[in-house]
Length: 255
Image 1 (cartoon, rainbow, N blue to C red):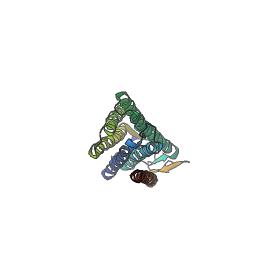
Image 2 (cartoon, one colour; image 1 turned 90 degrees about the vertical axis):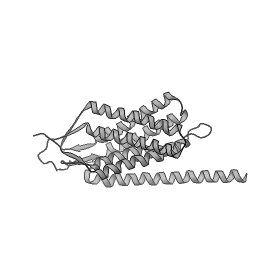
Image 3 (cartoon, rainbow, N blue to C red; image 1 turned 60 degrees about the vertical axis):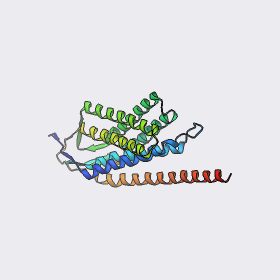
Image 4 (tube, rainbow, N blue to C red; image 1 turned 180 degrees about the horizontal axis):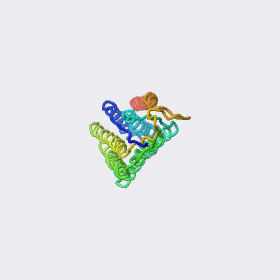
């Protein structure tokens, strides 16, 4: 007999998911002014750094920590392929949105287009990740709440992009990062509110088995390892860029 799955959130992990969204957003928005060289050409390294920070840590890692925060009275597993594709989608979409705005930060059409791309990228990552979630049953979706979650991501993401590129103080960038983190988390938890989990198996706690699946118990360590790897990558890249700027400044002083 089909039965609705009872769910609740672990508050400390919800807070951790917001912290990840904020940290990823702040790193990305601090890098945004280096996405374009002074001659207007694209700085690919900075674009990738910003995309990994925002899409990888701020969106993808946040999503899966949010999933770990969700306690269900049914066993669950996650598809590795779907999760990996959602990571790539998040990085590509966020990088593209930042690149679009960086070319003309005061162009309203560009900001709106980039905000749409960013919002759809965040939402796409979320629902791709949910598609990879396997339980002994299925998910009923409230499509109006799904639409609301996408609207939240687009609207708040657009505002955060405008703030990031059209303000200069560290405080304003931190405010933009808070807004971006709020957009990501609001989209995620609103999207989760659209999901009704239905169990159809007699043994609710039998983990769904299969090739390319990781259980919910193994999800936390897997996400932590991926987030750590991305953080190391970002740290190395930011250090190299800092060294290059320092060497350039020394050469200008001695010239």
